[in-house]
Amino acid sequence: MIHVQMPAEDPIHAAIARHRAAYDAFQVAPEGTPSVEASNEYDAASDALVSTACATRFGALALLTHLRWWLADEAEFKAGHQPAYGLAEARAADLTLFLGTPLSPAMRPNGDVLAGFLPQAAPAGCLGRALPACDRRRHGAARAAPSEPLPGEGAEAALIVSARPDTAHVRAPRLLTLSGEILASFLLSRDKTVLPECGRSGRRHA
View 1: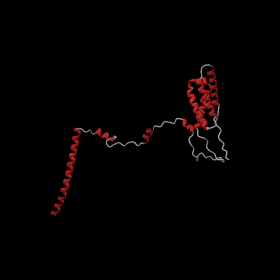
View 2: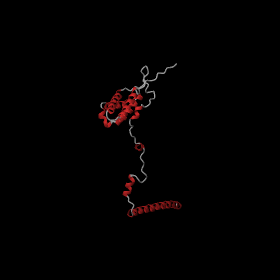
View 3: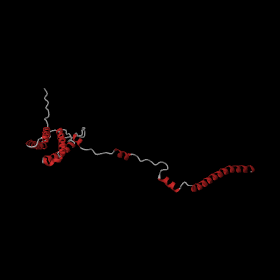
View 4: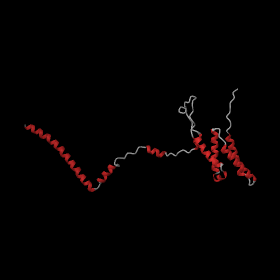
């Protein structure tokens, strides 16, 4: 017959249950002796809560969740719950660091480190820490290539337009220049047709 050894229950769960029961009883206790007795039990449960060690990681996570709730709920009356309230703040900070820190690397019997070769899951304590904000649109715009200017939109085109405005006074010299170019082209083409004929007529007389 195979005997399976079950892990011992974490004592922190009993301390959490006692503290929550004492808190609920103190909230509804009538004035007088019952209120004093409930207050004493509440203080004793608070002292036991901050002094009980956690045996498992799940127990530490349960304690951190309970401490965060209690510290936020009793923040207005923390002066009446000292020194347990101050100890709870310190322990909540320690638990946050513990649960948010990766475990130590696994070791072989001969001392070799296996952490670099074995996959590791993120510790549960990381879920309690806020992640930094990230603006995806800003990062995407930084990686995008700048748009090229269209023809006629560059700085050179702006200088040309400013130096040569399109007015009637400016269009007249342009028209004269264009007419002169057309006339020169016509004369050159006419000379090319006349010169060969002169050459051929000269050879005939010879």
